[in-house]
Length: 204
Ligand SMILES: O=P(O)(O)O[C@H]1O[C@H](CO)[C@@H](O)[C@H]1O
Ligand SMILES: Nc1nc2[nH]cnc2c(=O)[nH]1
Image (cartoon, rainbow, N blue to C red):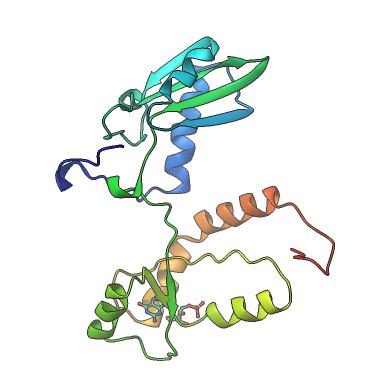
């Protein structure tokens, strides 16, 4: 069984932007000629999978700009590029876990009715219930879209940490500041989206 980090000091929080990911990817692409078609995450005890790769280029996570560090015992913390059966692959020798403080910036969204913002006490209560983000929309839209058989991807821009000093103008301002990043993200998502034209079954 994997052992979790000993103390909270080793916990890392991941608040990583699309630009940060891009810089890390650019750095890696400049260091290796491999262009992986297959990516393998090696779990505990499975790091040896990387040994099967030929023509390896290997990088310690600690040497990769912006890359998270592996804290779990037995995880080598190395990214290994190479070839397997003629296919270009990359192996992660060491993965990241929620208990290490990593998260996919994926979370629980709660809708409050608005138009007023929730009080600090209400926000704390929601937080204790497991809520990561609060808004005044989205939930009814998802309910209706799902009812119509649409596939739904919910994306919220976090504009403020609490409702203490927020106002709508502040929300709009952060939206303006982040507009380029959001545009890039949505453009990328749509570019990668596979459209299913079968309207009777999960059409996008
Ligand atoms: O309306 P959406 O796009 O959800 O954005 C947010 O902005 C408003 C508050 O300023 C709320 O409506 C809140 O949900
Ligand atoms: N309910 C709610 N909606 C928001 N929309 C943007 N920020 C907030 C917030 O703090 N609370």
